Image (cartoon, rainbow, N blue to C red; front, top):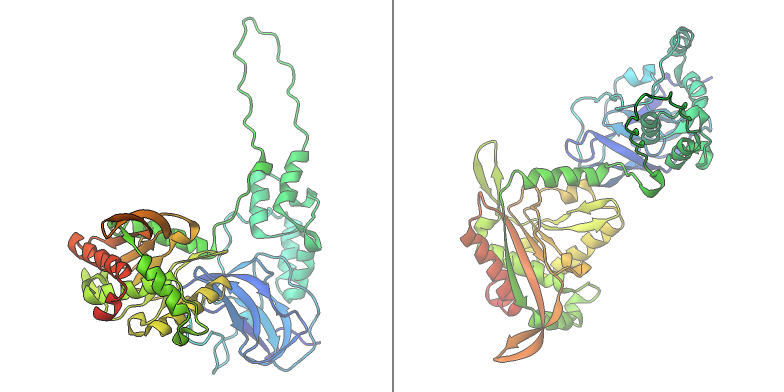
Amino acid sequence: MTTMTEASVREFKMPDVGEGLTEAEILKWYVQPGDTVTDGQVVCEVETAKAAVELPIPYDGVVRELRFPEGTTVDVGTAIIAVDVAGGAAPAAAPADVPEAPAQAAEEEAEPQGRQPVLVGYGVAQTSTKRRPRKGADVPRQEPAAQALQSELNGHGPAAVAEVAATRPLAKPPVRKLAKDLGVDLATVTPTGPDGIITREDVHAAVAAEPVPQAAPAAPAAAPAAAPAAPVTFDTARETRIPVKGVRKATAAAMVGSAFTAPHVTEFVTVDVTRTMKLVEELKTDKEFAGLRVNPLLLISKALLVAIKRNPDVNASWDEASQEIVQKHYVNLGIAAATPRGLIVPNIKDAHARTLPQLAEALGELVATAREGRTTPAAMQCGTVTITNVGVFGVDTGTPILNPGESAILAVGAIKLQPWVHKGKVKPRQVTTLALSFDHRLVDGELGSKVLADVAAILEQPKRLITWA
C-alpha cells in the first residue's frame, strides 16, 4: 500500500500571491482525490485580502488528498494538497472538515530543489509559516481515555485522523464559534446543509428549540419587593452576521488607516459637461474606437491625467519612515470598482503614456476583469491617484477617502440635466459635481485647487485635451 510519506508524494503549499499576505481562504476546489493533474493546471481558487486568485499546480501526478475543505482560511506556507507524482492510485474521499492540517512526516520534508509552488510573478515566501490555532476554536476538553486515543492516532497519518474527524459534527469554523458563543453542543444539532453540514440557521434553531426553564415561585416576603427586570432576548431570525474577511476586511483596515493617518482636505466644483457628453457620442462612431467602450469616465480619466501633467507635484506619496515626499514621474491611474467581494481599486499602469484609444481599451479590460472577480493582486498595487465614480449610483457627490499611499482621489457625481446660465440665458445643460480629496501634508490648497480647476475646465471645454496635452 502506498503511503503519504513516500518520496513520490509532493505537497503544494499555499503561496504568497500578493506581496506579504499571510493567509488566504479556499473558495473552490477544481479537483478531487483520484483526479489526474498536469503541470500548470488550476486546482483551486483562493481569496486573499486583495483579490480572488486561481492557483496552478507545479507538477504532474494524481491527487492524493485535499488538506482543507472549501471555506477554510489557510496560512501561507501550509500544505493544501498532496499529489503522487508517480501516478499511484488515490482514495476517492472528500477532505475532512477539520480546522487544522493533519500532522504528517511529509510536511516536515524539505521542498524539492527546482520549481517552487508559487504563482508566476508573485515570489516565494522567505520562511514557511506555521498554521496558527483559530481564535475561539471549539476544542472540547479531552478525558484521559480520549487523550490516549489521540496519542495513539498521532503516529498513524491522515487516515486515522480522518476516521476520528468523521465522528465530529460537520461545521465550518465560524459556525463552530457561533455554537460555542451560544453554548450549543453541535452533537445535538440537526444539520440541514449539504452533505450533513451544520449551518448557522441550524445553530439558531437549536437555541430556539431549547426549553425555557421555569422559575420557582418566590417565597412570600414581608414587604413587596421590586419586580426583577425581564431578561433581554434577541430575535436572531431578524439579524444576519457576516464574517469580515478577505477583500472587505483589507479595505476596511486600509480606509481606517488612511483616514486617521493622512489629513484629508476635500474641494468641490460643479461644472457644465454638455460639450464633453457630445464628444462622447462622437467618439462612439469614430473608427479608431471601434469595439471599444466609450463613456464619460474615459474623458474624465484623460482630463485628470492632463491636469496631473500640468501640476506634477500632486502625483506623489508621503514616506513616513524617511520623512520624505516621493514624487512619481508616472501615473498608475486607479479606478474604484464595487464587486460582490467588496470595493477594490485596480489601476492602469503608466496611464499617462497611453493614447485615448489605448486608455479606453485599458478601462474596458479593467472593468470587465473586476466584474468577473478576476482582478489580480498585482493590478491593485502601486497606484498613484484614483477616480471613484459615485455618479453611477445616482449620487451627486461625496468626500472620498484616499487610497493608502496615494495623494489624491477624484469623485465624479451623477451627470444630470439642470438649469444653467449659458451665454447669458438659462438653459438645460448636462451638469456634474466633482470632489477632489488630497493629502494636505504634501498637497496644499493652491495645488489641490489648480488640479480640480483644470479637470473642470477640460470637461467644460474638451478641446483643451488637445491644446493642454
